[in-house]
Image (cartoon, rainbow over the protein chains, first blue to last red):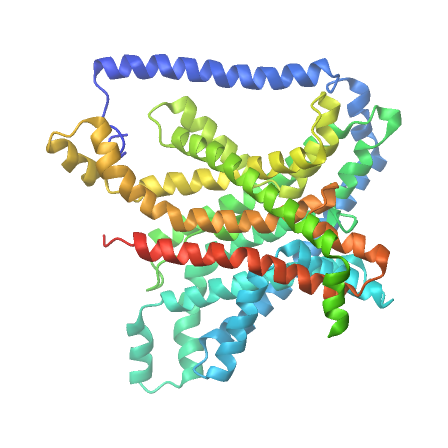
Length: 285
Length: 218
């Protein structure tokens, strides 16, 4: 690790010291994990009766239905958010002030509002007027408005990341505004922003868990149902561990895919634009 | 319009309590996640492989877990492990655990923005390790860290609303109380939005100010 700015390659004494600290750190981590396992064991979380449910086909179907609920909300919201993002990114990139100003206002506003409050707009407001809107759509509306606004920013950054020479050259050979955007900028921009889009879809997928709060039957809701069964000794811990494993599995794979895309696009330069950063922290929190 | 104002003035104490708890939750979780996040970030850039592994594993697990799941685990599953928090503490712990993964990433990439040549040059001048760190590396790393750190904290402020789903009376919980009073929810939610904009605005101004003040030519 000579590339680290913080320390040199250690000498013999440094190496010995690092080995000692390393052993202590490993012992600490093992102790921490051991303590967690001990707590689980002491409170009987590994008992068969708490895990027995997962052998039942009905419970497996229940979990599967929860997963389908999650993926359905995420799928619809992804499509709508991409659409929303494309429209408002186009608005923000427009040469006309009367399109640019409202698009900017909408995008900035929805990014500043907590996602749960956006979901509540879709949940409580129709409820008040007696309109029936399913909580799936309340969730989808919130996810679309928030992630659509974030995606609009990603799209805009993607188009802006294409070097100016590209559009200047396109204008020079006589292409019109729409043609430049469609034939020159977008094909390059899409490639540069693909990893960022995938990582935003991970965020969206995670956020479908907010559906739990408005009692939309998704994975987390199912987890609570399974965990709340007296006959199996309230197996909340096993239930949430299983649910967490499913989330981490799916989101982890998508994250790895985003990284792979990023690496590949950096290596194989098929576009003049640099790929956008995958993990822009403020988008992901 | 008067309806709109009455929603706020008639329920002043509920809004006060809600946003008061939001701010309290934000401040407590901010301190917690800064401490834990910087510690984890230090792990990730340390020369000890075991610590680097621990930091990376923590970040990868937490980053792919929904915040709501962290909340649900602490509220419903933790008592089964004989770990009992009240709702407010559970919320603060959940926000801390979740946000520190992102703080950790900010710290790590902040340190990585400093070119190795900077420290090499400093050592070539004969500065000690402590001097290299405090005079050369950290001032540059901190400059790169502050704007994204502020972004993470702003996002965390918005995330405090998730606590509403777990029996904490904060701003996000106001609509469910208002539903009982039969107040027009659209106005209620608008006031909550305004409240959040008021809370976020100074943070954004501070962020822009620091960004300008700390901008450095590289």
